[in-house]
Amino acid sequence: MQTIEEFKNVYLITEQDIENLMFAKGLMEKHQEDFISKFYDYLLRFKDTPNFLPDEETISRHKEKVKFWFIRLFEGNYNEEYLRHLHKVGAVHVKIGLPCHYVNASMSFVRRYCFRILTDEFGCSTHRDAVVTSMDKIIDLNLDAMTISYHEEELRAYVLPRKLEYNLIEFARRFAFSVDILLLLVLMLTSLFVLGFVGYEIYSIGTGETNIETGILKILGTLLMIWAIGELLSAEIHHLRGGKFAVTAFLTLAIAAVIRKILIATLSTEKIADILTLGGIVLALGAVYWLIGHSEKS
Ligand code: HEM
Image 1 (cartoon, rainbow, N blue to C red):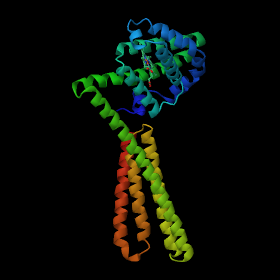
Image 2: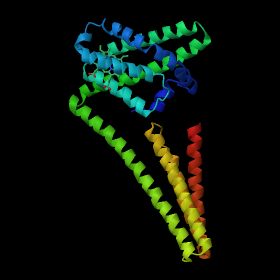
Image 3: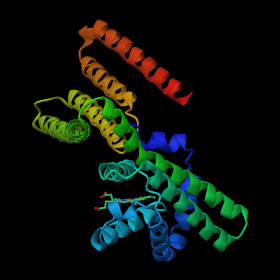
Image 4: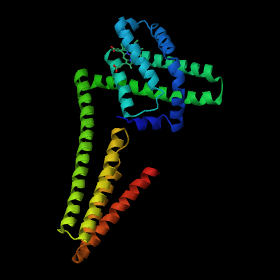
């Protein structure tokens, strides 16, 4: 499953596009009611529409949801939750058996509607053209994410019974999400334990159980671990928001752990060979860290 960052990269959605879309939000909000009324005039042209939207209750529920979707196009917060929302909309359409070309056609209507509003407001100007380009990108992204469910549905027809496959994929999706949340909780808990350890070290120095030099080195080593756990937490949050998982966060943790060991080993003069070995490991980890960072950049 692609992440929102991958979608943004593929559709070349830049910070400037996001700014353009957010700029258009006020204008589109002003036209929200007009939009939904024209959108529905258009939907009612499809001969099958009454089969899908059979009564007033369903229609008014759908109108509210489409209005919400429409305004979200211009909110700029295109995150993983946004992508999940689009997948869900697609899945609902698939579930009711709505033909994909109705979704494509109505999206094309939305595109034309937005372009017309922009032309009326800004005339033929470079500013209008810039916003139109950004709008094109976000509408394409929406269409792509919403119609993925149709392709999945086609595949499913060849593999497992529809309901079983749907439930299995849903279960796997939720399971993966729960594992990420669990990881986040364990990391937070671990950093609390490590903080407790710092407290204990300070207490040991205070009571004279540990001498000051040893205590300070141990505290510094432990703080290094907290910093590395912080890195891991940020990487996990980034991952939950749809970013790629940063392997370098694990390397940072490993480097921090070895440096901590070196700090502790330096307290004993007999452990020169150990310190040299640990130094070699830090060097090797550092080289791998650099290589990964370098290859990601290029
Ligand atoms: C640009 C095209 C469209 C957009 C953005 C859109 C948006 C949405 C959204 C946001 C939902 C709610 C999904 C959820 O429950 O989370 C939905 C559901 C639904 N859509 Fe659409 N839709 C589009 C096209 C159509 C068309 C062409 C039809 C039928 C002719 C249709 C019929 C329905 C129906 C029947 C539901 C379920 C409503 C319910 O029972 O709550 N949609 N759609």
